[in-house]
Amino acid sequence: MSEANKHLVRRLMEEAWNGRNLEVIDELCSASFTMVDPSAPHLAAGPEAAKAYIAAMIAAFPDLQITIQDLFAEGDRVSLRWSAEGTHLGELHGMAPTHRRVCVSGQAIYRMADGKIEDDWIIVDTYGMLQQLGVLPVN
View (cartoon, helix red, strand yellow):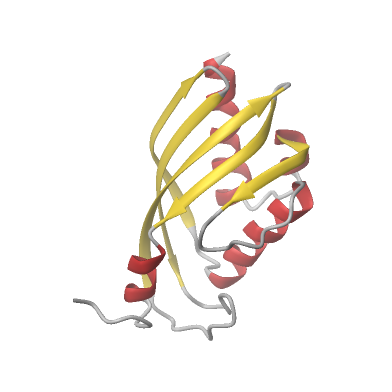
């Protein structure tokens, strides 16, 4: 089961995020799929909300590419450590494009149920990203 669960998360990264195939989310995620991201506290639930979240990030960083650094699974949980690189060419949460390239790291834990992704808890280095964008000072 752990390998099958890792496969779902890998497909989410490779097909939805990197491949820009947002329709695959309907296949990978449950109808009640939830995302929890402290940097985006008002996320809606469901596959359409996940598509909107990913589409917004891709609009802000059209060349965004995610690299899987580590992928572990145990029981109904999958842990992912990732990095993402992209150029800020579109609006991001009301922020005008800076045209700066960023490299951001993050982690996520996914919970699976009935062969689909049910929950996604995300932690992103938002502070580091804002420093790279020139919004916050670099110490």
